[in-house]
Each structure stands twice: as structure tokens, then as C-alpha cells.
Amino acid sequence: MKLGNATLNQLPETVLRPHYDRAALRPGIVHIGLGNFHRAHQAWYLHRLMQQGCALDWAIIGAGVRPNDARMREHLLAQDCLSTLIELAPESSAAEVIGSMIDYLPIEENNGALINRMAAADIRIVAMTVTESGYFIDPATKDFDQSHPDIVHDSQNPDTPRTAFGAIIAALRLRRDAGTGPFTCQCCDNLLGNGNVLRQTVVSLARMSDPELATWIETQCSFPNSMVDSIVPATGPNERALVHQLGIDDQVPVTHENFRQWVMEDDFCAGRPDWDKVGATFAKDVHAYEAMKIRILNGGHQVISVAGELLSVDTIAGCMQHGLIGPLFAKVARTEIAPLVEAVPGMTPTDYVSLVHSRFSNPKIVDTTRRVAFDGSARHPGFVIPSIRDGLVQGTPVEGLALVEAIWARMCQGTREDGTMIEPNDPSWDMLTAKAEQARRTPSVWLEMRQFYGDLADAPRFADSFDRYLRLIWQDGLEAALSTYLAS
Image (cartoon, rainbow, N blue to C red; front, side, top):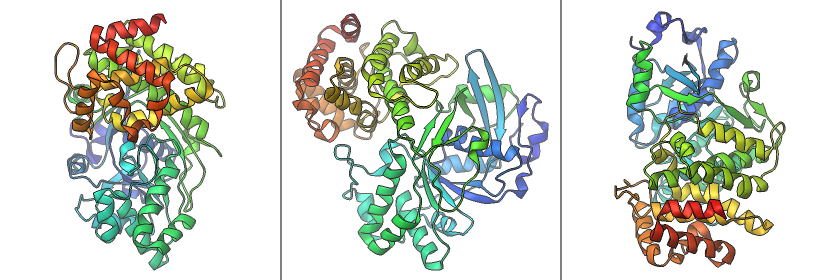
């Protein structure tokens, strides 16, 4: 059965579906980067609020700025912007169709449709999930990278921007000039201080072409920090087969684990839905929540995914079942990451490690090591290297984290230990493979990438461990290196 408004009442009784009148929904949010995570997380929270008869004037309009977003738009419009979510617990599963999204804007080179829609008075929040590497941040200094060609273009052509941030600025200029007022810019990516990061990118880009507008944005718009959490694999044939077994023809279904968390600052200049009524948390300070999740879960993902790639373990659950990779996560997380993380209400760092261990081990979640290891040049500086720096300052162990970085250096050489090729898996793959090949003979070359490691090459406690483990991996193999660390 083709998913759509006309077939909602014909869905199997076991599939939850919208009870509200979707034709009566009115927009309030534009979301840029409308992938699986957004639909399983932010869109789900809004849908659940709508199921209570609330927030019916906060419906989502999807948007994208990349050419390949056009395919997602085509699929979703063909099914009236409905999505099937399949929750996969270790011992059970459940399906739900969500309807909080009502339109998807055309993908245009100059982003005209996106700019005009964001400029309309009914839009009060512009949210985004554009990946951790999408904010034009220098990985070493964390400053705004104003030299990027797309940023240079947008600063010189503010009315026809290439980037989402340029489009936001163009829309805010129209709103300021028309007296419409500001909107909240809401980052939903896994970045520490993600609202601050989004503020830096938008305001810095605006300042390059219109300093007066930049000041207006900085003083009038809101950029709330938030922590988002749910494991949501990419959609492939297996996921489509799951939804087809329910009798539903959905070309873009989403599978997700049986866990969600959303913690955010209550800083919305033009109003917001009451997400706290359906499980979200509003907090004055989300830093501790962010740090716990980013260091342990996102950092833990990198700990196991690079090892899984090298040892040809296809999934994260498979990594946790592996006799060496699972113990690697447990030891690194408990002894080298958790001691650097503050507790949050209701959760200690040690308890969070146990929670993440069980979530990673869920065999129903077919989350590939390739997906999780993707874009390591953004994820290691964001999720792993901060723990190394803090460990060196606080005197806690960093040997396991040095091993993880050595495994990443070995992975980026481009071959697994069984001889198969690793397909390019990073925007900087060519540079990384060249450095990794050089580091095979001289490990210190890898740490000389100061854009990632800064001065860590000059920290003997880390650099010496890295050197020792990378040499051991190349000489005796990864399993020997893992065994050495676990026995130490």
C-alpha cells in the first residue's frame, strides 16, 4: 500500500498513525537537512505533541541546499511528507507513521525558494541537521573559516547564497527590512555548544558583507544550545524490507533504537512548541548533558567503528560482540573518558557508559561501521581529541585514546587487515591516505596534522603511546595491539 494521506486509515491496526487533521496544520518551522535523524527525533517529538492536539501551527517545512537533497524531496512529496518510523528494541519492534511535516521546498542553486519561505512571518524557528563538519569551523582553532570558497561566494553574493547559512542571513535581512522580526536558529547536530557554533557561523558570515545586519542578528535572534540523542541507521534494502513486511510502500522509512533524548536551552525569541510535554527537557545549562553524550556515545562510536572497519566487522552491534573491540570500548570509556565527564541529574558517567554499552549492543539496529566512521576528520577532533587534551591536563590515562587514534591512522591507509579496500570515507580522504601511508614508516607524521591535533604531537605521554601502537598495528596486526592494551 502506497503511503499517503489517502491510505492512512487503511494501515494495519498495529501501526500507529496521525490522529490530527493534517490538512489543518499550519507551518512554523523550516528544517534544513531533513534526513533520517531529524525524522526519528525532532519531527517525532512534534508529531507526538500534535497527537495531543497541541502545536498544530508548528508544522515542519523541509528544505535542503545540496543537489542530492532533491531525491529525498521527491520521495517524501510522493507520500505527502509522511514517514514510517520502526522502533527496534532488542526483544520487540513497533511501527508508527508521523505527519508533522507538510511540505518540502524545491532545491535551487541560489536558494531562492528557501530564502523566501524563511522570510515569511509564520516561520518562527529555522532548524538544521547538516552534519558536524558543515559549520565551516577550523578544526584546530574552532574559529570560523572565512576562507572557504562557499563562504567567500556567499559574502560576495549575499542575495544568491550557496550555503544554508547564507540563505538564513538573506531571509533575516528581508525580515528585518519588512519589520517581520527575527526567528530562532536551532542547531540539532552533535556539536558541543551547538547553538554557539551556529551563532558564530551565521553572525561571522553576515559580518563579512553587512556588519549592521550581523549586529541585528546577534542581538535579536536566538541560538539555543541543545543535546540530541538517538541511534538512527541509514536506510537501505533491509530497512525497506521491514516496512514492506507491514504492507506499507514507503521509499524512505526510518529505523531507530528504543531510546531518545532531547535537552535544550529555553531560548526561543519567537516562541516554541511545548516539547517538554512529550519528554524533551528544557535546562538552563545543557553543557554537562552535551559533554556526556558527545564524549561517551559519539566518542565511543569512533573508538569501535575504526577498529571494526580494520577487522571487517560490518556493524556496531557486531563490534560490541567482538572479543576485543567490545572490551576496548568498555575500558576506554570507563577509565579514560568517563572520569572527565560531569554527572547530570539522574545519571552518573559510569551509568551512562553502561547505558551506551547496551544501546550499542542492540542486535536489531543494523548501524554500519562505515556510516559511524564516516568523516573522521570532523568527528575525531570533535568527539575524541578533547578527551585526550583533558586527560593530559588532569593526569588521567590516555593510552587507550592514543591507540584509537593509531587505529584511525591505520584505517585511513585504505586497506583492511584482510586485504580488502576501504572506500573513500572522508571529505579529506586523499590527504588522509597520503599521510597514513607516510605514518606507516614514521608515525609522528600523522600527529603533525596540526589542524586536527594542534600541539598534541609535543605531548610525550600521548605521542609516545601513539607511536608505539601504530608501529605495533603495522607489525603484528590490530588484534595484537588491542590485546596489549587490554592486558596493560
